[in-house]
Image 1 (cartoon, rainbow, N blue to C red):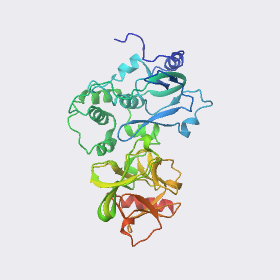
Image 2 (image 1 turned 90 degrees about the vertical axis):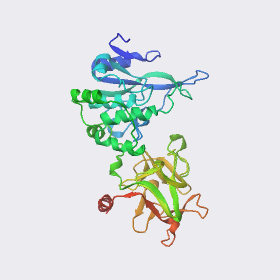
Image 3 (image 1 turned 45 degrees about the vertical axis):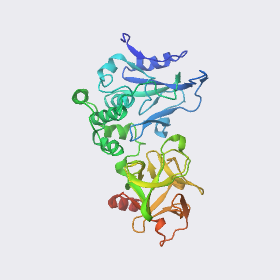
Image 4 (image 1 turned 90 degrees about the horizontal axis):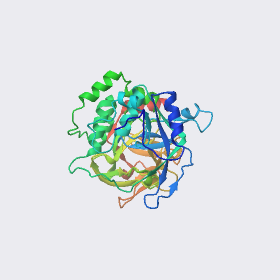
Length: 400
C-alpha cells in the first residue's frame, strides 16, 4: 500500500530530486526519467548520453520512441529542460498520489500487463495534466529478453487491454486500431465505470489530443488509399509484404501471397496487389530491411499499407524507400525524395518520384525490382484494396 504523497518506483543516485521538483511546481505534472539500460546477465550499466527521445504510439497501440519534434525544441532554451511527451514507456515515472487517484489509477479490468502506459498517458493529457521527460533524471532498467509473466491460455491479454483503452479514450479513432485486429473485438469486459470516470473528469476529446499533443502522428483516415497492395501479374495472388519492427528497417521489401489478414500487408491502401502475379506487398515493418512479396492473405497485418497525401507508402511511421538498390522500409521523414511515390489509378503503376522508375516484380515472382516504366507490363501493375478518388483528386490539386 502506497502511503506517501508521490508514487515512484525507480532507483539511481540523485535521480529523484529533478522529478520531485517538477511535481512540486505542479501536482498535475507526470514525469519520467531518461531510461538507461542494465544488462540482464552482467548487470553492466549503460548511461544514455544520446539526445533524448519522446514517447509515441502506433495504431497497433504499441508504444514507440521518436525524436523530439521541432515544435517542442522551440519551447526550450537548453537541453536540460523537461520536454513534453505524448506518451510514456510505463513502469518508470513519478506522479502525485492524489492526481493518480483522481485519474482513476489503473483500469482494474486490465489483465497482467500491456496498455496501461498508453491509458495513463492519454488521460493525463486529456484530463488536465502534463506528461514530461526530465533529462536531469536517469534511471537504469533491466530489459529482459523474455516475459516473466505467466500468460493465460486462450486469452490475448494485450488485445483485451488495448480494446478497453480504445473504447474509453480514443473516440472514433478507435476504428484505426480495430482495423489492425480485423475488427475482432471479442469479450473485453464491462467498461461502464471507466466511461463514467471520463465523463466526471470532463476530459478533452482524443481529436484534441492528436491535434495539440501528437500532431506528428499520421492519421489513417488521411490516406489516399489503404490496405493490401496486390500485384496484378502472374495470377493476381501476390502482395507487398514486410515486417514492421525497427530492428528490420533498411531491409528490402518483398512479395507474399495476399492473405487479407492485415499485419505485414496492411499499408493504408489496404492491400497493394500486383495484377499479373496476384502477389501482395508484404513487410513486418522492420526498418532498413527489404520489403517482400507474399501470397495475398487479405488479413491485413504485414500486408496493410497506406498511401499518404504527400506520396508516401506507409506502415505507420515506416515508409517504402528506394535509394537505387533494394526497396526497403525506412523511418518516414516527410521530405519526399526517396520516399515519394506516384500512383496512377488508371495504369495501376507505382512510379518512384526521384528515379522515375516503376515498382515491378521479377519473373520468379519472389523479388521486388525497380525498372523503366512500361505500360504493357502487367507485373508493373498494382491494385490498392481501398482507393479514395476524392482525396486523390484533392491531393493532385494541392501538388499542381
